Image 1: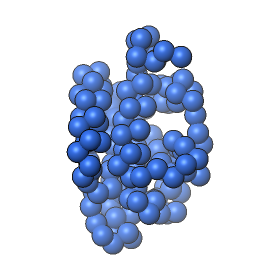
Image 2: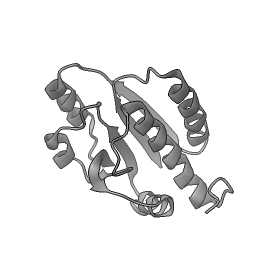
Image 3: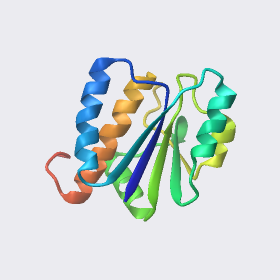
Image 4: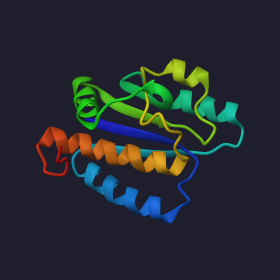
Length: 143
């Protein structure tokens, strides 16, 4: 499995970036991981870049509070049942464009809460690692 994560903007908060770096290291020891940071202050241009970055050979997942939510086990089963490489699109603080969400295969909600952009990034990466741990029978996921 390959995983690509498109992140809008930079992760400036060092606490989030530092913790995410740990999870990214653990994830990349098990799967091919590509992390892409896209920046553009013009939301339309950013959306166009995100759409242009979609690869039809990948199953595309946009993150939005109005998407479908899962428990960690359900999320793990979901991503492993797809049998395709995955691309996750994390939008800017103002969210993803409707055009982009309509262009993806699935819309995922990590929470009904609105999360700060950098926290959403960390939660996504942690949940990807947790999903892998669940599939591998690791003790990381204790529930």
